[in-house]
Length: 403
Length: 123
Image 1 (cartoon, helix red, strand yellow):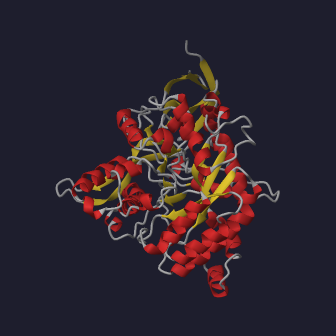
Image 2: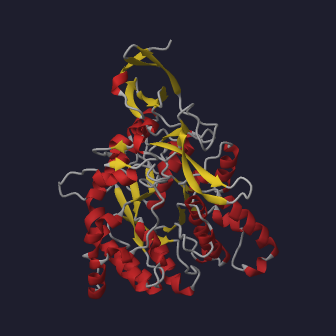
Image 3: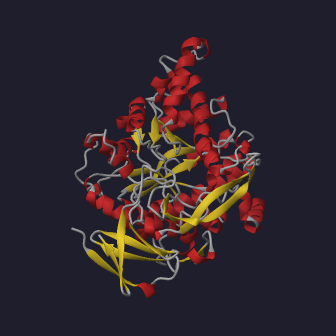
């Protein structure tokens, strides 16, 4: 495969591609830092479910929709832009298609996941879809329901039962509240499921009464609810930006900013005190900004949020955050302040986001000079072990949750 | 004290060519760009990616009208080549290894010696 570059003299030809070879430096890091001494859990990695779209289509229950998407699979998901690999500079995007996996009956997604987990030093992953992150933006909410149901059947039959290191989330088709509830009932107790997922790019008010029974059920099931962010370049506000960097930097935070505002100001932390909420793939720099804004306004407009019993930022410290894409300023005091603001030692969950272009290795946490060894291990795995109730005894027989 | 590592013969390299040679537990990427030799550690200072295993790309520039300050597209500047780390796309100037996005970061640079037909890197 030829990778296009800026001119014909510097073309790069690749005959084969292997994730483990690409990540050989990550494996060296893992060995140097003794990652095998403690569990590392990635709360957010991804599969390209679109590569298995023909398998997923077979699970679509609506006959007419099945026929339509069989002829044009792309209508189920909106394009997320070809800009992710930075003009091909992040080579695993184009090269992924030529990576060989054994024809041994184990799904390709599992083989590829194992390769990057083993190279990076990750023990378990929480697997998210990729293209489906934008399905909440489809004008036909019935397609979101059908696609989500097909995906969940495929995920819980073809992927999760076949490797205990790979965990998943129940996709909630949130534009159809009753269907979201039903999805939770049908798939929430399946083996390998560790949480419920709302994809953040959508225009649903998450404080609507229609969702309360779903939140109550998630709380009762004892699994966390995660809001996974994304971008939507077609959003009228975002469409003003002309560079992917702008749409990405803003989009991946703004949807979660809005949902968190609604979550806190409507007192949902008080209504569901035992429901753990995770804010995923927005980085963490936005949290102190929003917390300071809300605290300042709340002190003047307390009457608008009568359910609150403490400052908005106090509720923010009760919730969880995945680390990636972690903003690492050259001045580490800024990052240290953010860690303090979110009570990172207890509430931050390492996430790689692999294989996406802005993936983070465990070194982004492990090499931070202001964390001690205990804090590093909690963020890299210990917090997730407790939150997701992951049994790590197969890889760490002597591991103690209290450690 | 620096040691010499034999990279190969000059005839092994075409213009824009690259060879990666082992150096202990790491590697060094050796390049021939417009008749000049360059060598860098195959280790990105960002998160440790194999920087020398990525693409070579020319610098991207905006075309801005000098008086009107209006935007007229982008172009490649082939006088400035960049080493691109394949993990995240960080770009480094071939000339000195400095990161294009933040000069506080750079690739570790090595000297290259040519003796006769042989190419050596000093590591």
